[in-house]
Length: 190
Image (tube, rainbow, N blue to C red; front, side, top):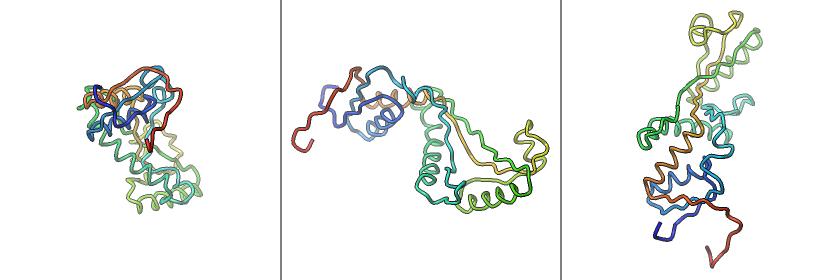
């Protein structure tokens, strides 16, 4: 990078490389400083599961900020699942694999059906399944199950995902330097 960077990012995990991806694509001069290597910490070994619903459903609050963030993030990752392999040439292993919350008692059926209905009203693509359709989705499921709520979920291969973000950011001018940031100096308002 010959010019002074517009943005300096400390750390080349998913947050750092994700930020570099979006900023560099928007035309910013980005410098990422990483002490070790890309995705060498938690970002590289995460299960990288993407929940489309969020945890508010279990508390009966589907409009809480985390549930809204989960839905927005899921939609974004659906798009990235298509874009990143094209842009980077890296297979990030994106796959959609729904979650099934299974009911074995009449009480659980009542509770989970209510949850499914509430989720459907929030435009989440959620289904209540029972019998053959449920077992077709998951053939190994215990046949004593009375039904289940199926919620969308996806997954990526964490290390490849971060590597793809970094590669595309580099294609758009991001520079990566290895080194340890030990402090920040402020000059004026910067």
